Image (cartoon, rainbow, N blue to C red):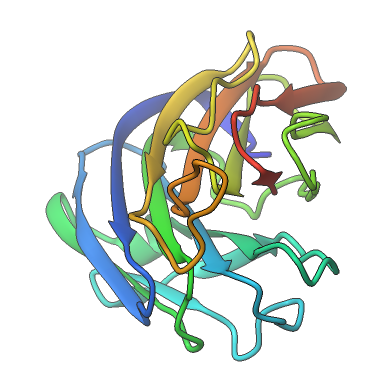
Amino acid sequence: DLPALASIALDATSTQTAPASTTSLSWNHVLGSGGNRMVVCGVTFGYNDTAQTSPLSPAPTMTFDGVVMTASVQAPTHAQSSTAKIFSQIFYISDAGLGSRVGSYTVAVTVPTAVTGGASAGCTSMFGVNQAAPEATSTEYSGSSTPAPSITLTTITAGDWVIDALAGGYGSSGSAGAPGSAQTLLYNVQSTAGSKTTGGSNGGEISAGSYELVATPGPVTIGWTAPLSQGR
């Protein structure tokens, strides 16, 4: 939940995917010129049928042009041994870290434990964001496409943006579906097949993001329709 300083405006989005055995991924994000900027990124890590501690340890790290980004919430793994362990992690960096940068810069993620199901990520830069930490954070797990992933968050400031990072896997459609009717899609990408490609699925890991403008503070529910087998 990002608090607005006046009115938040979208700058740019960027995405990247990586196959199984990946320990890092990087790509370029084009950062615009404006006031009170913030870059928010969601990363998906997939571990097919491989037990992992929650949170991931050692923890993944992310940088923007070499500057370390702040790690926010990481969705927990699931206890089922027969399904993939898919993690979703949000990172962000404010204007203090971005400094005078304008233009194309490298975003890099380090994954201490190589993924077996692939990795995917998306970043969004914005203007007009209060430079404080997020006002509210939460996570949700859906073990299958029914029920579709959704979560309720209580916003505090009028004009807040609620930004989500959905992680999913095994979707035969290659898509996380669509965000809720009040949400605006930011990105939706899926990695190439991992080590588990059964039941007509491609085994890739999905990373998707959206935002919802909340004019009046209070509870807001965000979610996705989901042709995917797991969601965070």
